[in-house]
Image (cartoon, rainbow, N blue to C red; front, side, top):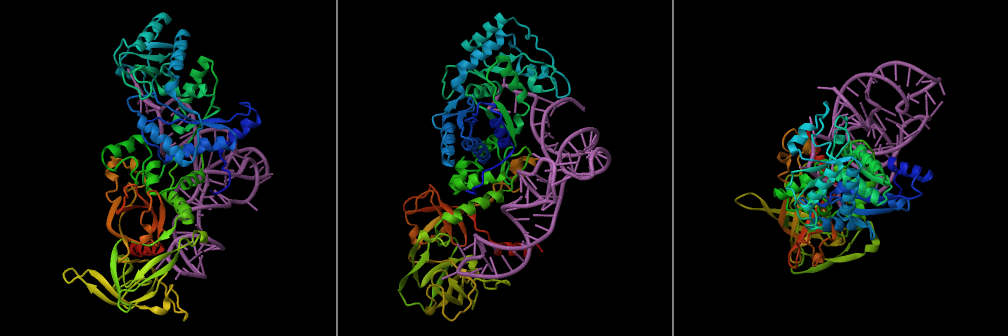
Length: 560
RNA sequence: UGGGGCGUGGUGCAAUGGUAGCACAGCGGACUUUGGAUCCGUUAACGGAGGUUCGAACCCUCCCGCCCCAGCCA
């Protein structure tokens, strides 16, 4: 954790409310997801805000599912959402609520509105309602059903509930102002007929309240003090105020903030669902997804995500955060905690000609130079090794520290080796094996003569290494803002976002590594054991590569 | 051409009438048995024009740009 307590305009407001005793010293927030998809990192921002604020000011934060649309929601999503919030490290105690728990009360509120002459049953079709609503610049017209008697409205609404009418045939509308410059105030629909089975209430209801009606009243019922939501609900606030005032109930304070956007991805449950359903990714928890379950599978830690959320702050400006900032936070977190191991992703055979035939040594390797308390381990070394194909070049460019004909490098924790011979495939010319000599005096990777060996390579002993599959991930989209390209965002899904390497070799200490455990593959990046792993088949996901200044130099040179 | 919002380095966030700062990215260097990490240095911003004021990123006016709203979605 970075340590410092965040400060932003919302916390300023809360501090002021506490000072003036606006809510009797209470701070009570809520995180209100609709269970129609998996949570993404944009939700993490909201979760960190709502739970964080409550914690900081000695208040409470409820978890409430806004489950008013049974056609899109499911218990699977409810469970996934709970899992992700817990994983992030937040606790809603016994305050797990559902808007559907309030359906009866909400119905009573609607009846109360009807009795006050503030709501009516409207028989206009969906298309007609749209036509009657007017446009952004022209006022709407009043529905011919607007002035039904209270008795008739009461009767019709009761019969809507009783199931006498088909879907879409009637709605209950608030009677506000068809000429309001705020379109949301032009007699909005508050109940619709939906003969659909709800994941919690089953077939008890065939009418369901709309979000605008439900949300503000649910907040009111729960005694929420600060109802934090995203900017697009700013226009809805006037409507919420109207409901609350007409009903004369407790009035929470809504404060809007900008939602999180990240470069090279999308932050919309609807669109993420499209990627899942369209087979562009392997599921909601695909490691390329910005979902919390995807990030978890990828190897992101809750701490990294929370630190990230603390860093980006909370404001009212629409913004797009560079995904590199997120990557910075995983690296920062994993650097401290991930044990170092050696893994060769694209193996190249290296034979040490002067190494005693059949000899095997165990070299000592530190588990984490950042944290000596993590100890050391033994790694087997022998005369036949694998190194990374990319660590050898026959005709190296300027500044090359790694292996090349005649060049000496250090094998991490082991010995210096010098390349003496390059063996190629006669057909293809591809380098298939390297021969080297080693310096027995350099055991441990050091000599007393002060010889300068700049390059250090990772390696595995061919006879001892374990085979593994490694999945490399790249950005989900090829452009920073896929939704703002003018044409279909699907055209910008990165076709190379997943690369599966099946011939990897990893050091034997990785045997039995548990899914979810994090490692730094020396010089390569941070990797996480995938749940697809099983006995005899290790599968790793690359969480994020290490910063690679050499690659950056190469790239810069190529650009010139 | 209605209404509601928002404009600070490349990106994100501060400074709330008194020296424009932090983080990431970038660039340069030191160190290094990870071309990692770490450390040091450095480039770079108040959308524009007026006004108020001794003094404006901050207050006022106008202009410009961007976002949201016309679901029986949330």
